[in-house]
Amino acid sequence: MNIRGVRLSYVGITLVTTLLLIASLKEMYLYGSRFILLLPMTLLIFPLLFVKRREWLTYNPHVFKTRQKWTKDDCLHVCLVIIGSIITYTLSIDFDLGPILAAALVGMFSALFLPNYQNALYCGAFVGMSCSTFLPNLFCILLAGLLTGITYILSKALFNGFGGKLGAIALIGTLMTSFITGYYPLNARMPSKEILHLLIFYAILAAVLTTFFIHRVKLSPVLSSAIVSLSGTLLLTSIHAHSEDVLSLMVMCASFAGMSSHERIPNEGYMIVVALIAAVLFKYSQPFIDNAGGKLGTIAFASAITTHGLIQSTYYLQQQISAKKKHHRFKAKLLSSFQIK
Image (cartoon, rainbow, N blue to C red):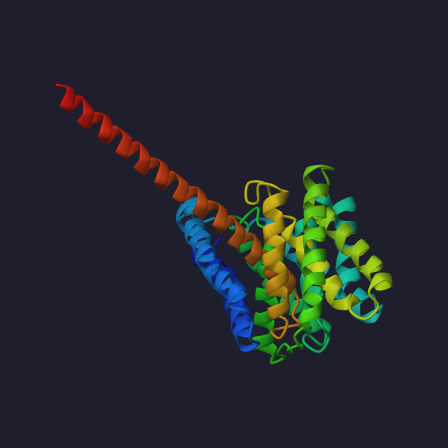
């Protein structure tokens, strides 16, 4: 496997998440968000970059130094990403199911009947969630699926355990296709301020439910996310008649965040923090690449990485403070022993 390709996939994933966060901060500033919200969201850039630097230096040093060969299984996974994207796009556009229901059905089917390939198919489903005004035909979907599949293989050892990683990979594929074909994503209107509390509520509910299904009920992350997305869409249609589309997207986005492993997000309490960040990013990133497949996962991915960075930064500071206290205690004990003598 090309080492340069692995590095490029790392850079691509890093860029799309960081730029999405910066774009959201810009919208917060332009829309006159309160200082109490803008300041902490701006500071989140540092834990985000902290984790990505640590991922490069610590977690996977062998990935950037060891050349690996493409296997038949890698080629199969690329094909499955393409198949997942085509099926989801067809269900969403031709059968008029919409992107959320289409992707959720593909995720449930793959988790139940093809568990060994569920991640590849679900990753492809995110490509197929693209709007027809962005990727208007099956050729574009095929190309986006191919590019996403290649990125999926190149990044299979990177950022493991973070919910939303598959979506970030899909966004890279769809954006590269956009640059090649000349079809560019559209921008959407900012959701009203009145809906922010609903976004936060449903984000927390969806993320915690997904985590519960994974770690308590022992369902696979893909199946858990698909169940929450599907049931959330069906319920919100009857509860919120005027804003069910935005809220359904929020539920699916939060379900991706809930796919994070316990090694990255240790418990439901930290998952609530992830959901809060995801809800704010979702609202303020709405004007950007709204109809591009993979955006929801990228929001979840950025939120999970940022929260993990906060956890790791806090732990690092605690270690430093503890080490200094031990040093001062040792120094004081040493001085007292000299005074006694």
